[in-house]
Image (cartoon, rainbow, N blue to C red; front, top):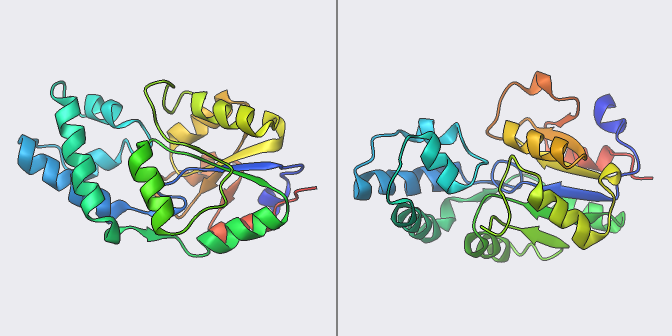
Length: 213
């Protein structure tokens, strides 16, 4: 816990969604399997998971899927939306958000998910204390570009030096680095090689130990 304590003067914490606040792996696997059936795609879910954190079209490009991106996305979105019951919040999700709000910490979400599914998930789990939600949109470059994080900084009027992004993938780290904010690696998420990150947590509850003064 010593490394997490070294983060000081934090006034804004931004969360990734998948792999950080919610465990959506089973939901994504179901949706990807439907994509494979409908569109005759051979790439496995294991291959898909390697690129989690990128915008969906970028994942397809990395899988060498060059055509029908819009149709494939519509299949994935519809399939994912039909099985939201497969999504589970990580332990202490609502508790830590409540604790942080009581400490007068601004809260944000930056995700590569589309707006519809992001807001539906937050409504499903009654997460209503987020100050700024920034889902992926073609108006802003997705991760690893910092556009969405910078958008949250501007909306909350918080300087990057006083902000931290909690993510679980390398693209999350790159985005936070380019936004000049701190990065906290969620070890329980979908990424690996946690030794490369300076600050990390094993549970969302670890965030209560940050020095916010």
